[in-house]
Length: 386
Image (cartoon, rainbow, N blue to C red):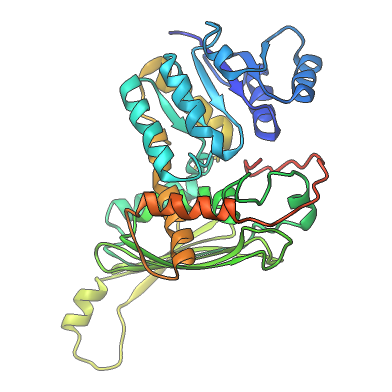
């Protein structure tokens, strides 16, 4: 296949962004051939914007069966991601899914099973994996340069959102419409990078506040503690109510400390391992010698276009994916565990009890008495949320 024909399901904020750069031929070996949305206003926008350059569909299944696409980008609200991906795989199509992979791991596991059986290329829009800063951070951890991880801390509170943002859509910040708050909307990228760089935790204890800073029913403030297989610990703090916010990611290993903040990566490198120093040093007060190093970051973040181009290259040439769709379940597992820990007021082991999570989520939906007045304004979220 020399030219991948791409269709997009969902042409809201993110779907429109993907459509525009594809039609501007910014992705090699790719051509946008179809758009689908259940909203007639969005289809009218597409008709006015693109004319007869693409075929328009109101029904995703019809687009999948049309024969005019080889692969699809799914850019719909969260709950629909797995079902649409499964339907596309069953029609023999490649799939690139917006984040998150879904709302609960039980449905995402089924999506992954179907993807494996289809033998098609499955990617997920974890565009921050294209950031060379996080790539370098991962390299220093994975290569052993930092040594064995002892502690991870990520304070990512620069996700500020106003009440008008939440009021811009009736589905936003509701259990039935979105399935969660900051963890499921803003933080899938961070949770993915956290596990991509540091690995998966084995248990989670989280404290979530629901509607603490906004008139919403889902979480807008989170403090979570995790433990890793080797005994290392981690803390993850996020909020949409802090202004100004902070974004500081710190990893401590037995050979030093890495800090990513303000677009810079700093490595406090120990001359000898802290564990070795602790064992051998006999001088009482003292600490290992360290060197503060500013790590050079080469390359540019290619973001959404970079992930799409990577997906197309994998389809055409069989190259490995930077963000395989099968890995979407990992960050979602962490956020599901955080929710479940908050709902049960207890520790949650990873992997979590998927049936219990689903049961608790359905209770949240069924028992919701929250009412919101939504003004359907057009809010563009440049970080890839809807």
